[in-house]
Amino acid sequence: MSDSGIIGEAYGRKIHAREVVAIDEAGGGLCWVRLTRFGDDWLLIRSDARDVSRAVRKLRQIPAGEQSDRFPEVGG
Figure 1 (tube, one colour):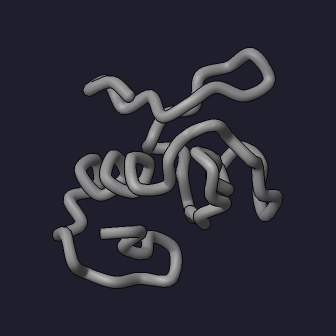
Figure 2 (cartoon, rainbow, N blue to C red):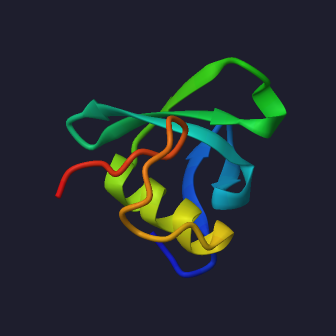
Figure 3 (cartoon, rainbow, N blue to C red):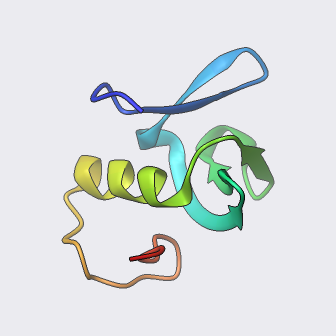
């Protein structure tokens, strides 16, 4: 993952952390994300949920350790 906020790619388009509205860990280097452009649909991407969570928290300035249903602290 880069510092540009790009967290993955789907359907030939880059996914930016600013688009993510929710994250859920899928395991095995995959995670489920909900994006603003897909509404309530979940999208499975090849990206570690911890990395995605970290990128979203950094972008939105959500303090580490602050729990929320949409952006849980994943892993350790």
